[in-house]
Amino acid sequence: MSYTRRTKTELAQRVARDIHDGAYVNLGIGMPTQVANHLPTGVEVVLHSENGILGMGPAPAAGEEDYDLINAGKQPVTLLPGGCYFHHADSFGMMRGGHIDICVLGAFQVSATGDLANWSTGEPDSIPAVGGAMDLAVGARQTWVMMDLLTKQGQSKVVESCSYPLTGVACVKRIYSDLATLECGDDGLRLIDKVDGLSHAELEKLIGLPVRA
Image 1 (tube, rainbow, N blue to C red):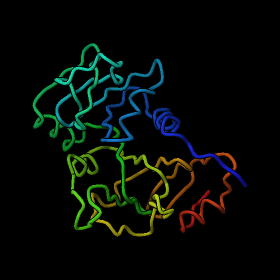
Image 2: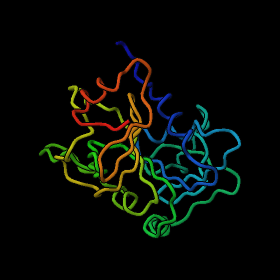
Image 3: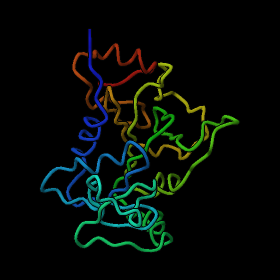
Image 4: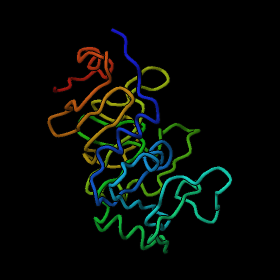
């Protein structure tokens, strides 16, 4: 059967749809930052950045960027009414103190039981960049991963056991990918949803692991 992958915009919309009203949320560098542009109308979500911002809005319009107001990935952001910025030590205190409801991170690998590897591939020429990922992975009440399901070489990023250096152990609750949304747990993977046209058997073959319906 034929199927169409979710675009990055569609994936950001899918993640945004699951963020509950009143949540304090940290969006990781890269693909997760797009979630800010797709939060549902009427839902109040307080966006946090580890460099010391609370109350971020969507990305600024072209030509209206203020490079004195940036997120942890050095991207220009906007500030909603009531938003503020402060020392990054206080920001990390929020993360480590369990005051972030959801963090959305990118990943190189996620295990079926929720282990996360997203800061280094362990290769000699790779540039390790952990940032605040370790603090978020263990400090946030829920850690979600947003990524393509497969590498450019067609290998699953969802694995039985991570081969890359770990960021956190059993910390990921959900994986939002371009082909399916999965839940991680002690008993492995559970399917939340998948794109139209992709059968359950095909999904399991792509991942190489059993996925409970």
